[in-house]
Image (cartoon, rainbow over all chains, first blue to last red; front, side, top):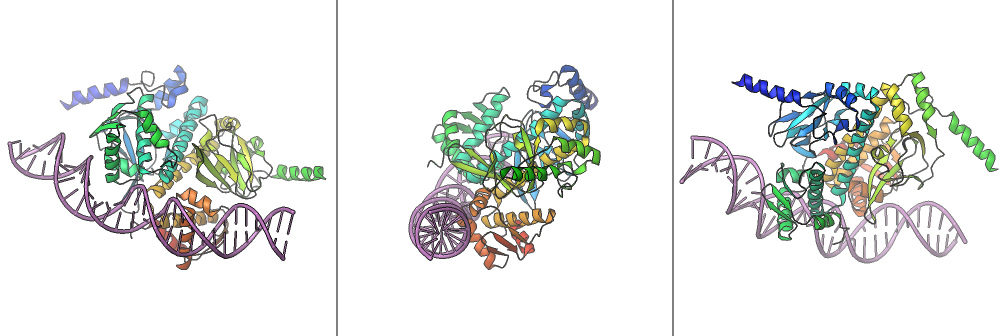
Amino acid sequence: MPDSLTGRRRSVLHETRCQTCSLSSLCLPLALEIQDMDQFDAIIRRRAPLKKGETLFRQDSPFTSVYAVRSGSLKQVTTEGSGDDQLTNFYLPSELVGLDGIDEEHYPGTVVALETTTVCEIPFDRLDQLSESLPELRGQLYRSMSKELREDRRMMRLLSRKTADQRLASFFAGLSDRFRRRGYSPYSFRLSMSRADIGNYLGLAVETVSRILGRFQSQGLVEVSGREVHILDLESLTLVAEEEGAK
Amino acid sequence: MPDSLTGRRRSVLHETRCQTCSLSSLCLPLALEIQDMDQFDAIIRRRAPLKKGETLFRQDSPFTSVYAVRSGSLKQVTTEGSGDDQLTNFYLPSELVGLDGIDEEHYPGTVVALETTTVCEIPFDRLDQLSESLPELRGQLYRSMSKELREDRRMMRLLSRKTADQRLASFFAGLSDRFRRRGYSPYSFRLSMSRADIGNYLGLAVETVSRILGRFQSQGLVEVSGREVHILDLESLTLVAEEEGAK
DNA sequence: CCTCCTCCTTGATCATGATCATGGCGGGTA
DNA sequence: TACCCGCCATGATCATGATCAAGGAGGAGG
C-alpha cells in the first residue's frame, strides 16, 4: 500500500521543525528566538530522503535554494571540460549546500548523496527577504559563507603545500573533529565516501590513498577495515597533519 | 610643510565618492540608486594610500572592516605553524578584502600592498546594518561572497589537477581577463607580484615559474621582461590552461 | 661609481606520488 | 553455491616538479 507509506512519510516530514531539530544549535537558525524561528521554519521545505547516489541538484541547473543537511552526507562535484571531475566538498549534517550558486543563475556543481540523506530546502529569495527583518539570521548567513571561505583557504594550503601523508592525516583529523562537534564519536566512524572520492578531493590517486592508509595502520595511528575507521592515536595523527616540512 | 601636504591629501581623499568613482560599476554599491549610494558612501572611510610592502591588516588582529580596493593591488598571506606561508589571494581594484574574517574575531591572514594602493574601509557592523534597509546592497554582498567561493573552488581544481604549465597559463589568462574587465589592456600589463609570490600562490617552486615562463616565451605565447608582460597569443594560452590531460 | 641585496634565471639531481598492471575481497544476485 | 562487478590493495616503473647549486641583472644607497 504505497499510499499509506507516503502518508506516513509525509507526516513524519511535517512534524520535523527547527525547534525540535537536534541540529538547531549548529544550523542556520542558531541564534534565533523562538518566535523568529517559527518564521524561518515556515519558509523551509522538507524533502523526501535521498537514497545513496541520488542527486540533490545538477551542475548548471537553475539556482533556487540552498539546503541544510539534516542527516547523511553529500559530495559536490564540478565537471569542467570533458570528463575531468573535481570533488570540491563533502557536506555533513547542519552544513549549508549551494551557497556558491548565489551569484550566478546556476549551481556550479552537482551534489550527490553518499548515503541515505535528508535535507531542508531553503528557497533563497525567501531567505534573503527574511534576512532583512531578522538581523540574527542575516549575521548567521554572512558567517556561514565567511566560514566556508576560510575553509576553502585551508584546503588550498593543503593542496599546494602538504604531502600525501599530511593530506590524509588532515582529512581524518578533520572528519574526527566534525563528528565530535555533531555529538558522534570522534574515534569510530564509518566513511560514507569511497577511496576514489577521498583521492579526488585531496588531489591524490586512489592507489596513494590506499597505500598511505595501510601505512597509517601499520604505524598504529588508525585501524581501517573497508569503510569502518577507528582512530587509535588522534594526537599523532594531528601531528603528522601539521608537521612542518619536518621530514 | 607637512601640514599643507596633509591638508591637500585629506581634501583629495574627501572628494572621492562612490558616485564619481570609476569602479562603481564593478564595486559593492553596483546596484544602488543615487540616494542609496549616498547612504553607503557615508559609512565608508577613505584611507591614506598604502605604500608597497605596507600592511593593511595583520593575521589575528581583530576583525572590524572589509575593504574595497580602489587602486593598486594586494596579496593575502596566511601563516600556519612556523614559517610556512600560503599566499591565498591577490586583490585588484573593486575587489573586497577581508570577507573571510566575518565569522571569527580575527582576520585569517595578513594583507600587504604589492604597490602603492588605496582602499575604502567599510566597517562591517555599519555595512550589515545598512544591508538591512538596502536589499540591493545585501544582495550584492551575498553575491560577492558567493563569487569568491566559486573562485576558490576553481583554485582548488587548479591546485589538485593541473600541471605546472596549466597553472601558469591559467594564471596569466585570468589576470588578462581581470584587467580587461577593469578597462585596462588585456595584452600588456605589469605584474605587481614577484615570481616567488606567483609560485607560492600556484603551489610551484620559484624555479618552476621561471622555467615555464621562459618556455612560454620561446613558444611565442607571451613576452616577459622582468615584470612587464605582453600576451602574444591569448587563445593558445587559454588552450594550454584548459587542456585535458591531453599530454 | 661601486657595492650590496633582492629578484630572477638556468643547470643537475633527486624524490614524491602518478600510472600501469594485477590480484583479492566482499556483497549482491541467479 | 557460484558468479559477477565494484571497490580496494599492492608491486614495478616512470615523470613531473622540488631541491640544491651557482651565477646574472637591476635598483637603492653609500
